[in-house]
Amino acid sequence: MANIILVTGGARSGKSSYAQERAEQLAGEKTFIATCPRIDPEMDERIDKHIADRKDRDWHTIEEEINVADIISKNKESDIILLDCLTLWVNNHLYSHQQKALLFTEDQMTSLCEQLIEVSIRHSGTIIFVTNEIGSGIVPENSSARRYRDLVGRCNQYIAQKANEVVLVSCGIPLTLKI
Image 1 (cartoon, rainbow, N blue to C red):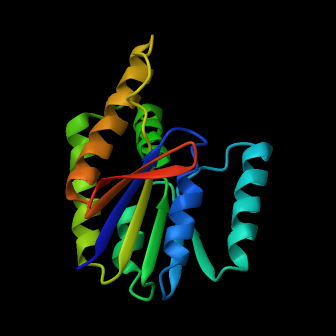
Image 2 (image 1 turned 90 degrees about the horizontal axis):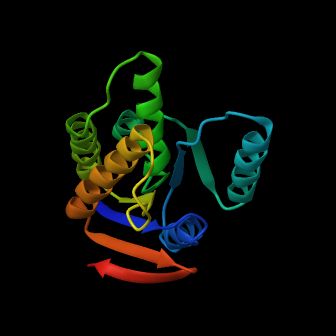
């Protein structure tokens, strides 16, 4: 049964660095699942830099925007899986649905989170999920942004409830919320 850790915080709070450092303290094979889509040259450069930074640290990187549960389910060789980040995973599902003129609901989000946790629990090592805490800001002015905020909030709540540990990173300082 996996040890599931959720690391959350605001944008540029240090949560990804904390999650990677935490994972690197553990012994075993490590896989990094990156959910960020390659959308423009600047983003490509960021992604490539992150991959290069991990390359000398014995990470295997998989870029997957949508089917992260499948990746975790099939990944038997890694002792540690770091998924960065759930926030973009939610975004990618929302965008995919919008491109097909389909509504992506909180019930669908919950179902995807259930699937993700189900395969994660069966993993034999540690899984660290990174996500943005987006609920501390103002209510967005448009319905699409409000839907996104609600979907990420639903995802974060579900994963946090099922996680063994939840850490909030603020200003680079980790604060344990759940052990």
